[in-house]
Length: 243
Image (cartoon, helix red, strand yellow):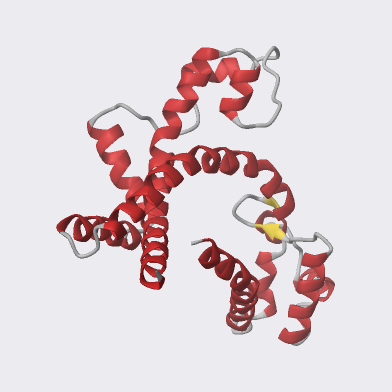
């Protein structure tokens, strides 16, 4: 299993390079004026006076140059930490990542434990009973989990456990705890709500934030269970064949 993970990690740079080349090839079909919206806030574009202003920005970002030159310039900017502008977040991409990374990291940290405890064990359990009804059932669960998009799984969980059974609400915290999290006495250490609530001694906020994490963690964990279970099963079967 470790060898499989190492091989995948070694292939990751090649995959990222291929994806970036493909994206730039697709962008070459757009005009420089269309691609300008990827670099500048749309609000700023709407206040521009004429084509002269557009041409100045196009020349500044090198959008009038050959696509190969633009790709080389993009790689240079990435290497120097200039990640560009996020039209979705409405801010430079570096700031958007810094702002939202703690939330993603918090979710990943809480999801990794059930993933490792359940997925790896299920994979070994399935491999030890290869060909049995249990093995078929577990592999079927893995295939279903692997084939369901994450947003579909999230919607289904929200429908059942929030829409039908109002147990686990969406969002990071409940409205009643927002004044606590925004009060002057509440110190933001990491921007991870559970960690900050613990460090501030706000036990009610801690429990509430954990409650809001249940559905996102289940969504991420279930999709990861399917992948890791297959890896663990294949790894153990390979070892058994070699023995």
